[in-house]
Amino acid sequence: MSDYANAAAALIKATRGREDALGLRDETSRSRFLLHKHPTAKVIVFFHGFTASPEQFVPIGEAFFQAGYNVLIPLLPGHGQAGDWSDDNPPPLPITPLLYQDFGQNWLEKAQSLGDRVLLGGLSGGSTLAAWLALEHPQQVDRGLLFAPYLSGTNAFVDWVVERMNVYFEWKSEPGVVSFGYKGFQMPALRTFLAMGQEVLDRAKVQPTAPLLLVSSASDRAVDSAEHQALFQSALKLQPQCWYHCFDRTLAIGHNMMTRAEGNERADLPIAIAKAYAESDLTWKEVTTLSDRLQQGETLEAIAAQLNLSQRLPSDRSALLTALQLIAQTPEELKPHRDEG
Image (cartoon, rainbow, N blue to C red; front, side, top):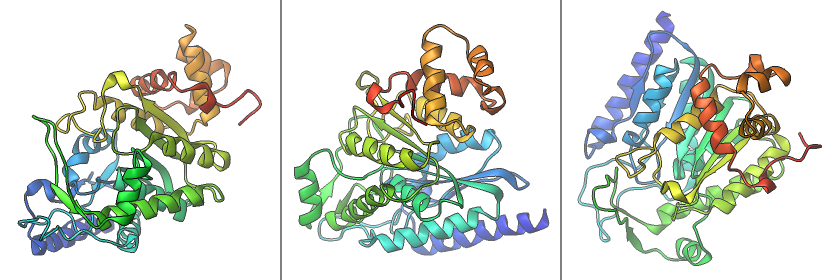
């Protein structure tokens, strides 16, 4: 216990010291630590989105903390720093994947001192980093929770701009919607994640990954859900415990889906499906079978008993039922056939 307490205290002190030296723009930029007084069975590390801040993962982080997890939400390299950033003076974001990859591996190692099993999650670029780590360290990553990973843009022209142009870009926010982090960036900084995303897509075709949950939204105008489906289908061939869901367009869930402050009035839905997945070892075939039969009017407990799955269902039945209702909307081409695992 004292070793755990010392490790946790040292991690918090070192992180705060580094961030104090950086001169952060505000308190929302600080890394967050939601830690119990003892090691936990599971630890989860959440990587926030490109140009955003750890504040983005506080709601889901608190939900996992209440479920008994130790939770780390680190500030990504180059992010969160105070400054008069503009086209002439862009924020100091990395322009090479290696800096993010070293950072991610460092936090994976830190998390291992705080519990038995480590899960990784992220949004957008942070999700791309989590996917890369799940491929690089499949034995050390228990689960990957990938929300709208940035693998490519929504059309070829946007990708061409990211790949070729060194322009400065500013985000456009809807009225009344919070935008955590920097308001703009130079394109080479985003190009870094495009390169990492392509590596993830290529590697998933030929090597097994840690189990992955991929979450998309049909209303997302920033990333390509077709690429999410392609990653899911590649990963599933070698890892049967992968799940996928794409939120229906009627829910109007945009790219920044983790918080109500950023515009997602149904921020409870990403949390529910993430909790159901994190607490389950069900395969995609098993979970889609449960979902389909639930839609036919059978009860969850009866289906699980008949399929000998009762002991493997997560304890949070409410989160599981929400996840199964969402998965019921999955297109048939993404569901396994009867003779598939």
